[in-house]
Amino acid sequence: MYPSRNFLPRGPRPRIRENVNEAIKAREVRAVFPDGLTAVMSTQDAIRKAQELGLDLILVSPTADPPVAKAMDYGQWQYENKKKQHDARKKQHVIQVKELKFRPNTDDHDYDFKKNHAIRFLKEGNRVKALVQFRGREIAHVDLGAKLLQRFAKDLDGVGQMEGQMKLEGKSYHVILAPVKAAVKH
Image 1: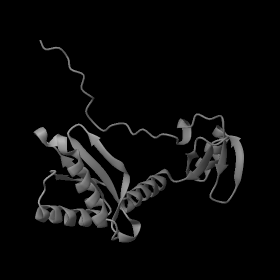
Image 2: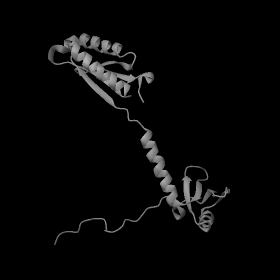
Image 3: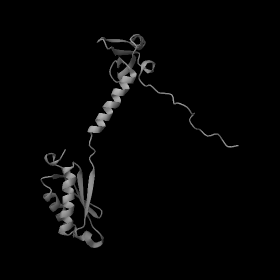
Image 4: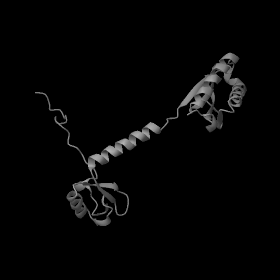
């Protein structure tokens, strides 16, 4: 016989309703009712009054002293919260760091090509990390990498600005450029 496995029981999962009606643990709350009445009362009295109105008592601000609870329809409250979260996600813009790699002896055409990519990235509102990678004995010519990064930052002066200083870490020299507010397309 095989040993029993710990699976969750089949069927509908019990819905956990936090901070609603009997799940409210505070002894007294500042209850807000739809008719405009606001009063500090015991939680049981507030729940009873909300149920008389055919509503649920929902804890809106649990950190306040005393906690604030509002009498309203729980389903409507969930719907409004989901809608607010959806709108907040829609409006946010995730800023990414785009990385461009150079070598100390990068040709002019390749440099211009990558510079144009950096301009596009900065206009989209993303940051750009320009990285000069040294291999083998190239590390002896760190000054070439520094000149290349300075030239790159100077060429992108109207679109991006340097964040901090250029850094030499291991076998790479890098600088991060942030977009200038005026250059960003919305």
